[in-house]
Image: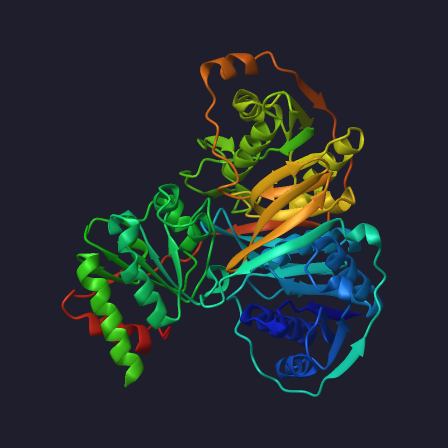
Length: 324
Length: 245
């Protein structure tokens, strides 16, 4: 029995959310006294693979095939399940990223495993029964999910654990998986990725704005604040519905649910549907000219006043802080 | 083209979420149920794709008779027929197995689900379903076009998008923006009353997990208000107190 962690790469690089899964898998392995191995699919160079050892994982299974250069969830799930059997893993850990969300149920179905998706805690283990927490009802509540099947798949919510270093030497094993042509019924035609911006789903800091900004032409102050913080930008539903910002930026109950370390809400009143998607943020700052805005009730810090005056001042103050 | 849309029934987005039985069950008292908003987008897309005699739309729902208003609304939006699997939707694994069982007896070219449900925030059904049916799948679809036996789908990825072509049949999880939401009109509502709704019996499915308890998030302390003329105080607090910068 062992723990297998699938670490996703983007163009040969690991993201922070991937490193988080390594630390999580290592912790689960320590809890259960089992060995742990990582799986990397696609073209990742040796130096990058060796960084996996930094997080206490001594073994990497490398599956690097031309066919698997692009992400195809069906084929990747086949590889993950095949490698899980190869290393005798009864626990598979992966990230609850956009790709991970597509992979996790497939892998679980293949292994006839219980699936904890969006996991936000380490398991509480009692024999074969593991309890794992996840947020439900768009962060309005937390559910304790009891995994009763012997095999478990855990899709870890980004920003749940900090990657922690426990350096060890790494052994890399190349593995030839059993995949079939029928696993490749989808073909990636094109990928467009903004490389100069922080991706919203796994951003540690998010600057978000609402209708209080009055129009899309006023987003420059939001972007400038985000830039100085190294943050991703987001928006409320009315803003994306009006076409001021893309749907991909909409956070809230019917948009993306996020849990960054710091969420700054500018000109957002704090409707229950919006709060649902952001209330698991560690720290919330609200800037709003209406002192009665419901958002202040769930914020850690608030500033009552005009966003057009306050936001540029905050950007300046942060620049001064970063420079000293 | 035959399209199947999987519909789940969820508490309205303004619902207050509380629990009963010592925090082990969701308190449905006084809660208004709606079609999961992402499933409604999937349905709107299906109706759009089938328009002008280009196809038919079937909706499937796993739930008890109490969710029939949700099914009738789906028919009013424009689905041609509905199927209800008469069972309590225990969890995603159960639901996916019920739908897979039905699909195996039919021929669908496309199976649509919402990207996730807004109650348990799972996106498991589409993945389970695709795996149980051994079909390709694309999640978080922002755009779908169909040409012959191929669908070209734009899916959202962290910080961008990916364009994927898939051979039909395919399972697709839809996100906002994939279609304009369709509002049922009076004619649709009238027609929905007489459209076929078939009730079928569930198959047995083993249980792999269960929710044993619910917790409500610990409330935050009172907000600390900062004077708008003393912004540097906020920066200092974020650094020393919240330790987030």
